[in-house]
Length: 124
Ligand SMILES: CC(C)(COP(=O)(O)OP(=O)(O)OC[C@H]1O[C@@H](n2cnc3c(N)ncnc32)[C@H](O)[C@@H]1OP(=O)(O)O)[C@@H](O)C(=O)NCCC(=O)NCCS
Image 1 (cartoon, rainbow, N blue to C red):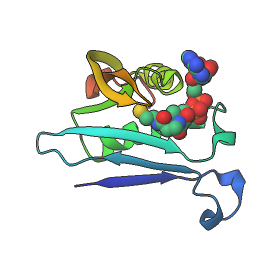
Image 2 (image 1 turned 45 degrees about the vertical axis):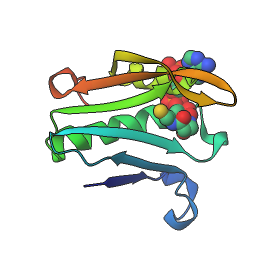
Image 3 (image 1 turned 30 degrees about the horizontal axis):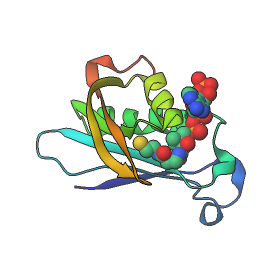
Image 4 (image 1 turned 180 degrees about the horizontal axis):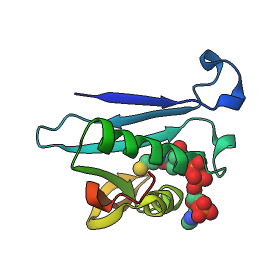
């Protein structure tokens, strides 16, 4: 099962013109651990808190509506913004795959993060 949640900015006009915060994916996995990812396609919209808010909405959907026990993700070591946003909403580091990805001729660590339902912060 793949689920994409598009979170639209209400202040940005009609939905067809503003799918700027998109999408969140929970990827297929038979054991109720689901992988999560997020992309805000328009860089001008970064740094306004939309990412953190969208992550909160998506994990709320995952835990409450999909009744997931656990949500997990990976983030690359150089992606400080995403790493910070994930930590801010309650994801914790669970391990590091060292030099796991070659990007632009340099090896990068892949950080594994996760959140259990019981760790979800109140109100999310
Ligand atoms: C990751 C992404 C969703 C974040 O969205 P956003 O709206 O910019 O996130 P927010 O504004 O809610 O939060 C960003 C946080 O990172 C912080 N931050 C920004 N640059 C940072 C850096 N270089 N180092 C550490 N923290 C940083 C901000 O200060 C903010 O934290 P704060 O609210 O405590 O001040 C967005 O940048 C994006 O779509 N990136 C491209 C796709 C991507 O990398 N996805 C993640 C794949 S794992």
